[in-house]
Amino acid sequence: MLKETTLRTATAILIGFVALTGTTASHGVPAQARCAKQSPAHAVALLELYTSEGCSSCPPADRWLSRIALDGPGPDRVVPLAFHVDYWDRLGWKDRFASPRFTERQYALAGQAGSRAVYTPGVFLNFAEFRGWASARFDEALRAVNGKPARADIRLELERPAPGQLAIKADFRLKSGARQSAQAFVALYEQRLSTDVKAGENRAVTLRHDYVVRKWIGPIALNGAAALRKTLALESDWKPGDLGVAAFVQDAAGREVMQATALPVCNQG
Image (cartoon, rainbow, N blue to C red; front, side, top):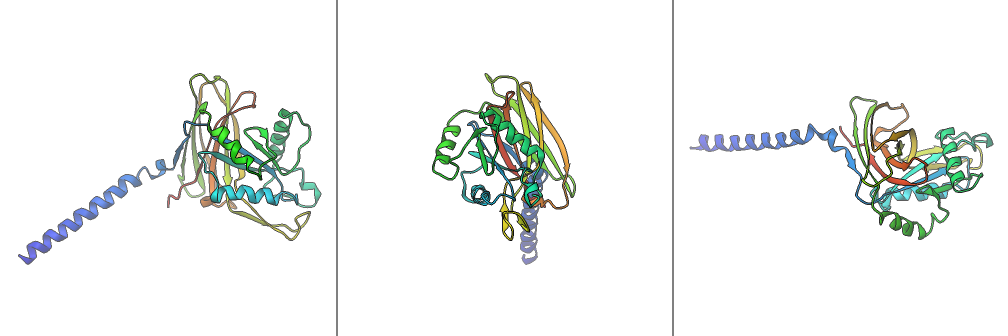
């Protein structure tokens, strides 16, 4: 009787273990597919900070952007990105995150706003210059954007097919009634970055950054819909656990953000 009870108990434990591991496996197989994000029905704001490690007035804006990561409104309200420009590089300190493409983008946004000048820190919210970023006006502006329906759908899916690689799947679709000519962009960003600055205006200061754009993909033409399938080779100084991908859709003239979304790279073991 004791042996039979022991056998039944052992069998029950084994069945429970198999069920548990089976459940884990069934969820584990599509674990990579679970690293996915579908944009919400309402519009999400796109926040662009133009900054530089050579600029002494930029650290407060960098810290403000970092607080969005810690206790901010969340990715279903705003997608923040930090673009490091290169026009400060000749003034004493070369910013390792800077790119001429980001400088060009800032000039394009300034031009749309009717200005030929650019400066740092420069903040744009849905392509409009936004000087009140450190005030209560920011949350008011987000509520105004979020109160509108999205004019496009975005789905992101991330996968780590091999060490040192990141596969990005991005699907874009314009909603019914939206103008059927648009462009999409995808940005790989990195969090929790720091630099000990050795020269320039921020000499002897340790600067910390979040949402730093490391890879910029686009424009991707949309005629109603489009899909991106791209596997990136990760640079040796990128930290995979601190990476994320953002995507947005704009109208063809580059004057309106139709939708935005972002997804951190999931921990896939």
